[in-house]
Length: 308
Image (cartoon, rainbow, N blue to C red; front, side, top):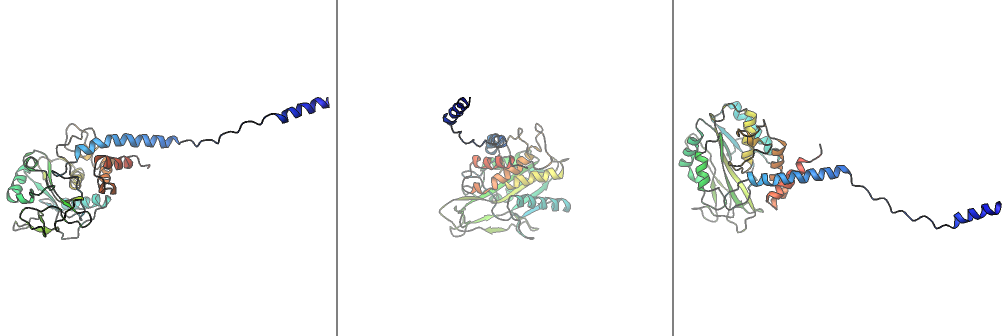
């Protein structure tokens, strides 16, 4: 019996060792897969949105503010003026923009008007050169300027941008009637006498690397906007002040303050997460090197899927 037991023990001892097991493969967390899927879905939704809403000047790329914001509100109650100016500064600060000092020359002019189209026509008639510079890459052209004066929108806006060298900030185009060494652009700055200020922005350069917003005129038709909450109206104005939004953009399917005056859309009372993501995308560092809709959408998707 002892011999049998030893034989059995020896048999087990002489058996081939069990095959080595491969080290376990680290599993990809389900959460990462979910977030990646959400981010891709957000990007696919953001790309057509950016293409729909952004409307740069003719022959140019999307422009952004690089100088401090200086807002002025005309024909409004002082409390309304104070709130709108402060809110614009807050929104700008969230995307890295500074605000000019007290007494600065306005580059964001917000006008409350009893008749929006009439106000627009008067301003264009008396200071057309402040709306159409005649230089490439500065405005959206005559057809859109006509629409600015005639559309029945509660809020209308007109941006001027300027191609500049990204290193020096100097213009890379010559404005009509200006020598190459001193390129000026008129900034709307009405005074009690009806005169306007002028800001020298630099010399002609050969290389266009960046497009800077120079000014925006925003006219609020008080009658057409009657009943609109001041908070919502101000956030709407802030968004169009900071970005070259197409007034004809169809945003019904998106959660944005831009639907404020669209009867076919669900209006929201303030800037939404979608709006903030858009502004962060527009003013993100990535846009400095690539201004395409895909780049802005990438940042939007990242912001929209950022963990709480």
